[in-house]
Image (cartoon, rainbow, N blue to C red):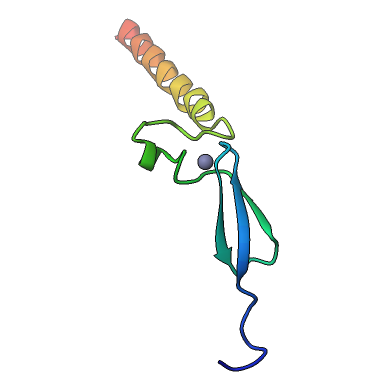
Amino acid sequence: MRQDIHPDYHQVKVTCTCGNAFTTKSTYSNDSLSIEICAKCHPFYTGEQKIIDTEGTVEKFNKKFGASTKKAAESKSDTEDIA
Ligand SMILES: [Zn+2]
C-alpha cells in the first residue's frame, strides 16, 4: 500500500429517521451519518406501498390537472347546448 494516498477508512454510526441505527465502515469524513431512509423502512424492503410525498406534489398535480379536466367537461357540455 502506498503511503498518504488512501482515504481514512473508519467506523461510522448511521442513524435513520425511523429510529434504526447501525455501524458500518466508511471513508465518510464524520463519525456519524444521518439518513432519511434505510433498509428497515424503505417500501421496497417492507413490501408496503406508500407515496413519499414531501412537497405536496400529488396535491399540486390534482389542483392543476384535476381542475382542468373538470373545466374541459363543463365547456364540452356548453357546446352541446349551443348545437
Ligand atoms: Zn429507516
